[in-house]
Amino acid sequence: MMRRGIMFFDPEKQDWKIWIGQQEYETFTGMTFEIRIQNRYYEACFEKDYHEWFVTLEDDVAFTLRMVEVYKVRIL
Image (cartoon, rainbow, N blue to C red; front, side, top):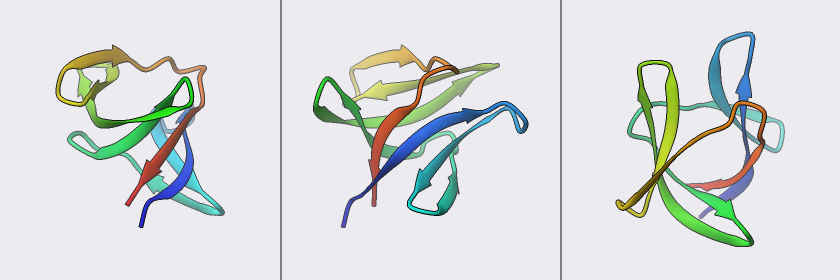
């Protein structure tokens, strides 16, 4: 079952976190989830290259995550 939450950058730990309800989850390279862009969810893979975090959508398009944004996500 997919669970909805948010993904945001934690400046104290210098890492991305996912919150679902009251539960915090760690992110890791290679993690798969769905990210919402303009009212549609896309399959995504979380990746890191040096100090730049990005996601690859549906094995095709990659984009850099902005540390000031909060992203809506779904995970299993």
